[in-house]
Length: 311
Image (cartoon, one colour):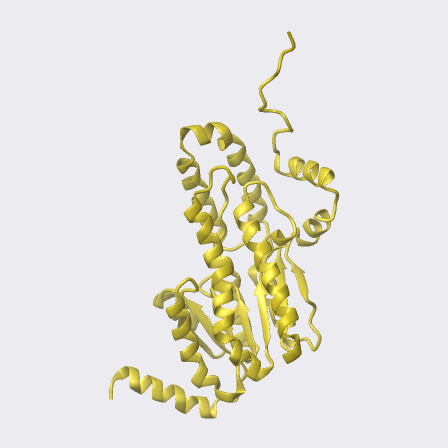
């Protein structure tokens, strides 16, 4: 018997005796996904935590105090998503999946005039298409358990910040997908919850800083002349706010609440600035634009427009 066959046999055997509730958490190698996987594991669920690298999975398993199984998966690879679902299915068996936490995502900051279309598409491939692919793959198991689907979005699905257009566009789309799922799955009593974090301090902040520096180089001479100074100043302010954000454990705690609550809310705001930004999003556009300009130090309207002289 091969090692793969032996592992499959062991999974089938354990599925007959496992009495824990089960959850799948995507994007669990760091940040919010990692904090959520570890908290759910401590809470008594058997967590399947998806990562893209085996070493991240082993690190996560070593940090867990409850039952946690790393699961190799890339949300942009349909074969990878299918294999992951096939690995989980025999373990949960007829009991099904009690919670699916869609967390995997990336963040892209560019001026809309300059953003490379392949990178813009990648933002949606991970943050929207990937979430739909994972939900489709695991939904039958969620239905068996009358489980919960928790989607980690962003308060950016309500309000767009300058140069955050690609990320906000994807988060707006994800919010719409979540709302459609909530309505369509209600007849099976499957609750679908959107969690909208504000400023959360994770390792992603350092990654974003690196990507900002890289983007500035990719603007080219003309692009830097148009946007360079404003982009750099605004992103410096934005990243400083993120560094003073709430810990990812704050989001993990809300995810547990959304899973365990008898009647969870449709949306949960969490983290620093989340409620302020959600309230600001309701302002009339002219006031909201002025507020965003002041917060992020944007040049005033017409600052770069050529002057017209009357003769």
